[in-house]
Length: 344
Ligand SMILES: Cc1ncc(C[n+]2csc(CCOP(=O)(O)OP(=O)(O)O)c2C)c(N)n1
Ligand SMILES: [Mg+2]
Image 1 (cartoon, protein in one colour):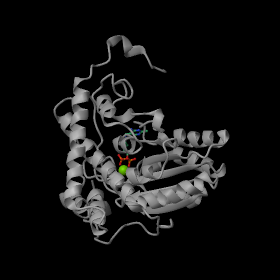
Image 2 (tube, rainbow, N blue to C red):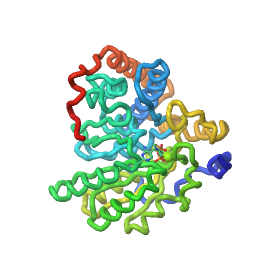
Image 3 (tube, rainbow, N blue to C red):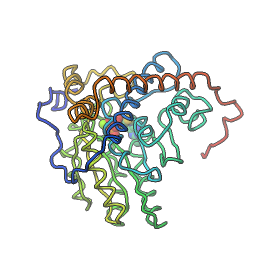
Image 4 (cartoon, helix red, strand yellow):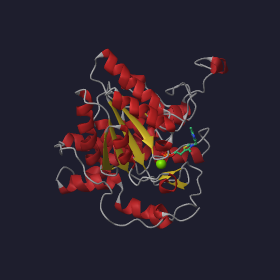
């Protein structure tokens, strides 16, 4: 693989985001703690998934979300329970941020009947309709049609619900993006398209396959507003998404948000990562770790002390370990269920 900008050491300039158009909202201490907890849940869940995978306790693969936690948490904190999300193959973070339960997610990943899809979906197909999770999706770009449909449904039913479609920089080159985002813009649908530009699609730097520097710039050509946000800054994500949600609830249509972020792990748990340097990965984890950044902010604003943050982190780790035990002890689905819930 040729060296490209993405494989060079990144410049130390602050946030890659250009302008944040949203007015800065005041975020109270409870919400800061909530966001810190949620991001910690995702981080620790993912670290344990790595462990579960290497111990042979789960079938299939997992695509870890470590490093991208602020995108899911900033976004979903701006949503209500009855709003919708569609997720991706890298979906654990989105599902946890929208209210998915640690134990049922872990059971699903392990293929157990107590999981969200009775163990038949696995890591890439977690769904929980009760909190608006319309499904993670192994088809890259698969969420565009589903979320745009959810937005159309909310509009036709006359509710003020919104849908958020999470997708990657790689997915932004799928044809379905143009087809659905154009339709949402024409019909003023209450959908927010959140692009997680984590710099790579599998092993390919996004600049190798994407002609525009900023994916948000594509919004103009499709007739909707495009916004760039620092996807490692949970408060910036919360602000930008809150503004897009308020606009969508009022009937003023969709927004495309590009969150600049980075995955600290490989594309999936078995990726040798020969396409990027260790220096590049360390730069992001040393300088742009979203959990550490929020922790620093909370300490600087006297909302938390380091010891309190550490205690919460440990408590969440216990909860994740309990979820693993739940998953391990849960039974596999009986063979006679193999032909249930099959649509094709
Ligand atoms: C339609 C389709 N094409 C190809 C794949 C194989 N594939 C899985 S993940 C992936 C890369 C996706 O990159 P991106 O959208 O940037 O998401 P990221 O993995 O970076 O989160 C590809 C090509 C797939 N699952 N579905
Ligand atoms: Mg990507």
